[in-house]
Image (tube, rainbow, N blue to C red; front, side):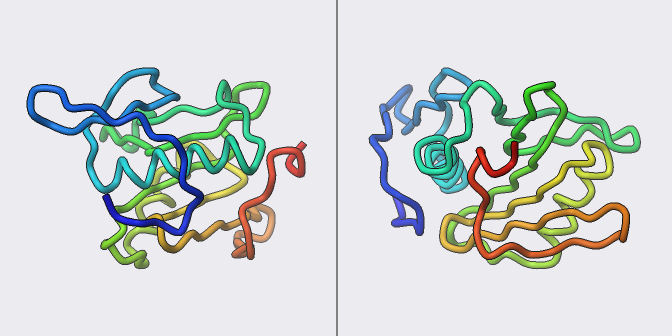
Length: 150
């Protein structure tokens, strides 16, 4: 797979029915190893191993209902009370992060109303802090550590 702008980790990769799969520690099962999944697994590992996020407060492929349409968030990080805190949207490394990607994650946030939005293609990562009072957002220079959010 492609080299990413994320720390390497010991990914568990196997072949099932002639296809490559990778172990998802959040879903606790092997999933198809697509370029987007490669980014997800690296990013999740980065959040847990380097940013201190508890694995038990993370979920992948979270279903939500948006105006009668079923959507799926790539990763959602929760607060201890299990309300959503961060939505993460992943793209394959060769997919450019555009306004359309931000529009996608913003639509998910209509339902979840989180504090942070993160978008990553494994090469570039963007993190926004939402300000609902002023109806704005601020791009952060880095993704905050979990303990700074407490």
